[in-house]
Image 1 (tube, rainbow, N blue to C red):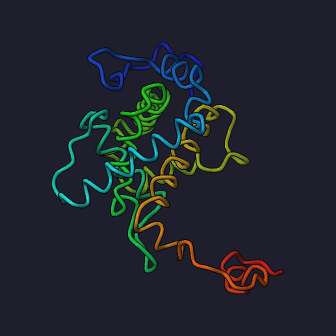
Image 2: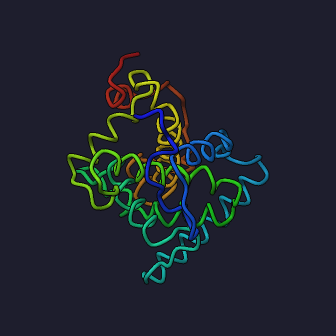
Image 3: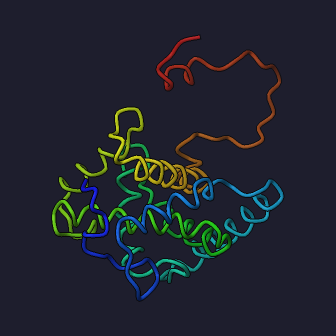
Length: 216
């Protein structure tokens, strides 16, 4: 990654008609470090309720979802990215099957303070992909996408120059997991049984230990 940040071609600013160079993208991400954290407990409960209602409404209507916050390009990027994090497998559907992008957009609509860091990271992802391939994340190949994600997915082995991308991607991954595991698909994936009475607690069942790959 070049040190001459301002010499690199500018990229469109998320949700605006202007441009941002790499230095500005990193500044936007760094300035709001921690902004992705969930809000206060009271506000979190309110947001969770609102998001649940929005999701229930979408499932009932089964119609087209029009993003409230994301641009069309951001929307496509998020849809691709969340399915790299939680793909469809023999156990359950993918993140897009669970309406995770809709969850994210609804949450960002309710929490404006989270938008700058979140969308700045999406812009950084495109900027870095263009630096490597002259394509953005959406138009890049599967191999090119995976190569970039491998650089930012593992904090312990990531190169220092990718620290901002690593921090953002870990927040994005947490956001994806939050959306997935509060969806019907995610709850079923966990095998959650609800408020089932337990006559006698005998400890964590062996099956749970096996799924975790550990022993008592």
